[in-house]
Image (cartoon, rainbow, N blue to C red):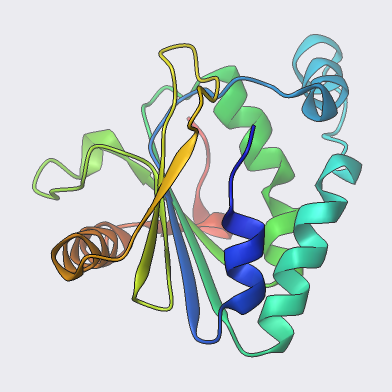
Length: 172
């Protein structure tokens, strides 16, 4: 997977908002052991694989960057989402605010049809996925046109206002 998000976050000064809308993503080798132990053996989710990401978030948060992540999910949730919920404490401890939004509860919220990051209200990183959740090349594109930036910011804010904070969300 090649994505420029870490490089973009290294330059962020104000905000970094991420919208995720898939019920499953392809597991990179780095995630596999944690997922398998959780889903197959019922073990607590190992979050060690997230150390690189959490360092990136901590560094940006220390500069005052506001991190928000919203996950729109189907219910009942997939096993992947159940595992992701169990690993989310690492995101929060690093400095992210995370909310969950059930598709069942938001029929009046219009969102763009792709996962994205919007950084500093000026740069959109559009994520591309194959049907199986893997990252085809190119896996992302960077866009700065004002119309798209405005569209994704409005989409994110509308959905965020309906989201349930992580500590209050019970993956059903």
